[in-house]
Length: 249
Image: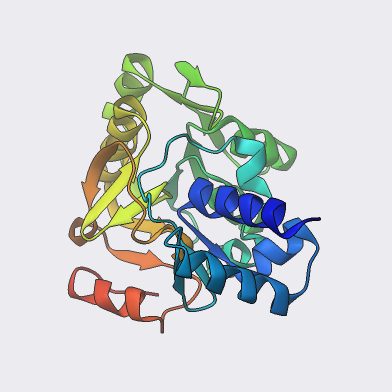
């Protein structure tokens, strides 16, 4: 692969995700760590991206398009597994929980071993995974209009069902986090997420650190109104800066 072509692909990866780790770029382009780091240095010198610890950040933080569900499934898998494992330690037997859409939440759902937990979700992939546990586990799917990008239900019908439901815990993910604002791509999906959070005693955001500083179209909730944010690395500068809003796990 020519250097110019590689640079273009690196910029596409970084711009599509807002941020990208060196390891993720290596995996996608099949080149060495040294080559990627040299490329990032050159691209920064050209004013095309900003290098950060372990990777790079786009100069265009607002997403031009949302990644497909399939694309999200192969990005930052190790980080998502770390987050999901942490989240399982917060579960309590016999409680009712809400699981929002997102590939991190899907991994988390797969790790839930306690069949006494009652689960409500508006995410079709999560529901399909959990139906393998029937009839031991009680699982509810909220219907409505489906959004193909996230394979989740939203809208008036979904919200009408959610209005009368109350949860011990709600676990959600999101496309971006800018200061105190949790962001997603559509108003409708954000409203459904916010309603589920408002109807829950404990509210958890599961998000890998690549999304921090990433903007999206609609800010639907404040970080300070959640119980805890669960992420993969609690020691980075950008994570520590969020502790003024919320406990970080």
